Image 1 (cartoon, rainbow, N blue to C red):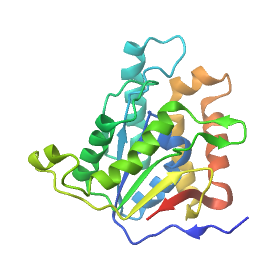
Image 2: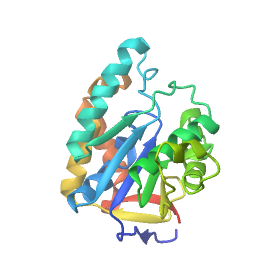
Image 3: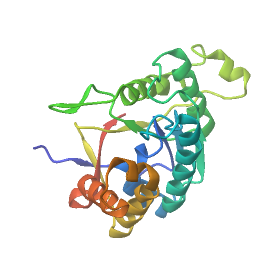
Length: 232
């Protein structure tokens, strides 16, 4: 296996764009905690409120619950800028409306790095990726270019949102190229951040919430690093 390159450090502002509450916590949270501890700024954008994510809990009850859990998860790692775009959970449509919403947020935040989830059909052999993750991942890659083009969504200029060029896009991917080293303290913050989704995790398994969270974070921080596929 080819050794991963070190994740770039010469940047100040990052924007995480994902489909659902809990998506950053499953893969990126330790890296986010590490960056914020180093003085970098990280913003989160959720395409949905995850309202279709808890079996037996109606969307109108799940949406505010999952939104609160995401707010609590953000607090654990130090994220203070959180936006929900209110696309329908499980039914995100890849297209111009989604790209426009993402381009708007990119221009608002003006990040050096945009982070998102795997846009490919699979996580690996026999592990199909969800429709929402595929749609969001591809739309993010397109929206990064859209944000730097004044003619694709001219209404954004009319709203006072100037063009912005992002330097890198980093993806939680089964085909990583770069790794962000993380401290033991950042790993503990990541565990706490994922565990903040307690009702969601309780619906997934009878295992204790913190045990589920620690197992996942241990898996994605092997060798003390979080891996990404980097475009730039």
